[in-house]
Amino acid sequence: MSANAATPREHLAHQLAEAVAEALRTDLTRQARALLVVSGGSTPVPFFAALAHQELAWDRVDITLADERWVAEDATDSNARLVREHLLVGKAQQARFIPLTTGHSTPEEGVEEVAGRLEQLTWPASVVILGMGGDGHTASLFPDSRELSLALATDATVVAVRTPSQPQARITLSAERLHHALRHVLHISGDDKRTVLGRAMSGDDVRELPIRAFLSCPLAIYWAP
Image 1 (cartoon, one colour):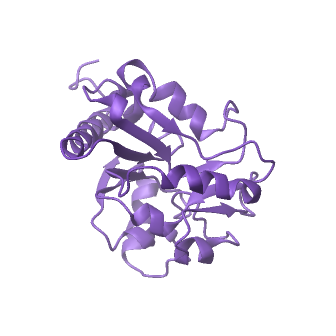
Image 2 (cartoon, helix red, strand yellow):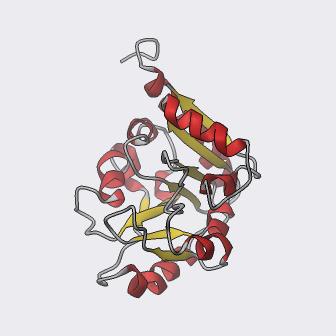
């Protein structure tokens, strides 16, 4: 499909893919490896597909997730499965993917192992791409999470999360670790998400709308209807 025939969301996905690829290329001119942190859900799928076609030294790129459900990597709602099926294809299959789950039965048991993996990567990340839910959450920083205050304040790399509104336990990069990046992007779509973002920009209670934790840093917003 040509760019002119693409939907607004597909066009936005290609713009974001080009920007992210250029950021990775730039960083790879001055360091051996570069790190990309992505989010799950349905919104990034066209972006993943577009990014996978970019010319890049993929064998020098590490990719990990902002958060993950504590499910098997081949589960239908696994963010790792989403990345493997839509991003780690074609040229991009040469990238190294670092999942956020382990063989432990709970994220609390697996946190230390996951943190150890992540701490071996090249920080600050080149790009952190965030999503946002209708409740203002980003990564697994949910307004109703019992661990929200911890995840917003800790200098730990990852936090195990239990959230009443979500059926599965989760693991998330902490806000501090998500801030540890050269570039931040918020990738959202739909009028409802634009309305939530407007609310977030007009207030400062991070516990009400956790996306506010990232509005004070330079944040490139990619939105399409």
